[in-house]
Each structure stands twice: as structure tokens, then as C-alpha cells.
Amino acid sequence: MTVALITGANSGIGRSAAVDLAAKGWTIYGSMRSLDKGGKLGAMAAEAGVEVLPVVCDVTDTASVETALASVVAEAGHIDVLVNNAGVGGNGVVEEASIEDFAEVMDVNLHGAVRCIQAVMPHMRERGSGCIINVSSVAGVVGAIAQAPYVASKWALEGLTEELAVEVADQGVRVALIEPGIVKTAILAKNTEAPNESGAYDAIYRRMFAMYMAGLKDPGHPSEVAEVIHEIVTTSKPRLRYTCGWGGPELSSRRLAISDEQWISLGNVADDDAYAARFSELFGLDLS
Image 1 (cartoon, rainbow, N blue to C red):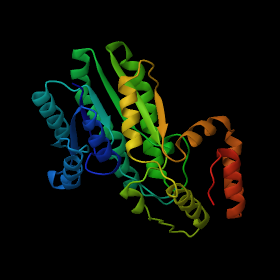
Image 2: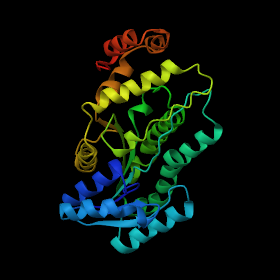
Image 3: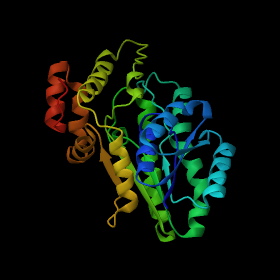
């Protein structure tokens, strides 16, 4: 029986993955900061005829993480899979996002994953097996404009994961990244902040929101992430990076294919329509 702990399971991708993987016969522990936040998760699980076991875990609190991981091991006997999914967004251009904004996002998206990894690795190393999956984003591959705190956290998570994969390879622990594009969750509807204090970044925010609006016309489904998680754990030919969702494959692969100069040149396109056309040329995505 595969035992998995999914952080941030009370909403969005985490909630869907928890229910979908439980339906595949896995024993799923879904973490959240408070059990009061687990109502929708419980309802979705009941509707699907499965059980997701809730665990209190605040990924910004080391003691909370250690207690949560220990409680799962004590109850289930082991943890086969850790999915570091808990995360927050963070809009703002580099000039205007505060240090506090950066620190808050990094504490969840990067430090939260580190806390969970540090808590689970002694257990996995002792067993000589396990799988750690970090949910990143295409914003960890492309410098997605007007989201500086979020982008910084995801790029940092990418580097951390790449390092971790090498460090624990000889200990029987598989490590992987998931880089979703735009996936339909309630979080996207809340992504409306445009703290353009100087007034110098109107076009940047318009273009950021235009990309999300384009993606929401045909977004990926959260269940796609569950399928990727299942593939990562069960495949005989593992990879480090996986992607899904609207724009995920295109942005992650094509950014590697274009030059830095081509990427930066997007910022010099004055007209929004011309920007959308050039973006489509580079990435194969329609922003209209």
C-alpha cells in the first residue's frame, strides 16, 4: 500500500490530487494548517467514495512539520511519497514588491518544502526508499512578469530539487519536479493584485493578466497533476521534470530553445497586440 503525504491538500491542486490518488488505492494524508479548512476536502472525498486522512501541518513552522510527519509515520508505519504542494502566489514587479512580500512567499514555497524534506529524509533513508515530489510551476522555468516573489520562490525550488535529486540518488529516494502551467483552481480567481505603485508597469500587468485569461479559456484540470504524481512514483523510467496544464509543455520547452536576447526583446514591444503576436511566435500560445 502506497502511503503519501500531500501538503496544502485543503484546496486546489492538492485537494484534487489527494482525492484522485486515494481513488487509485493509495493511503493519502492531506495536510492543512487547521482542520477547519478541510471541509471541502472531506466533502469531495466522500462524494468520490474514498477517505483522505487530514493532518494539521503549518509548513512555515518547523515544529508543526516535524509533529505532522511523525504522526503519519506512527499511524501508517511509513511514508512512501511526500508531495510538497503547499504554496502561495505573489504578484508584484521586482522594483515594487517589498522584502516582506518576498520573505512571506519564500517561507511557504521554498522553506516549507525544505522543512518537510528535512523531516522525511531520515525516515526514507533508513528504509532505503521513497519519493519526494516538489510542485513547482512554469514560473520556475520562465521569468513570468509581474510575479517577482512567486517566480523567485519557484526558481529557488527548482535549484533545490535539482541538487536534492543528486544528493539522495544513492539512498534509494526518487526526486521529481512538477511544473504545471495554468490549471483551473479557485486560486486563479483571487489572482487580481496589481500593486503598480509607480504607474510605470501598466503594460506589464496587462500582459500578465492577458496570459492568465488566455489560459483560463482552456485550462488544465487539477486531476492532471494527480496523474503526473502517479506516473512519477510508478514509472520504470523516471525523469526529474514533468509538466502539465495550459502552457506548461510549451513554456518549459520553448524557453530552453530561445535565446536570452529573444526573451528580453519581449519587453521592448510597445503594442499589446504586437506583444501577443511575438509571444505566440516564441511559445506557440495564443494570448488573444
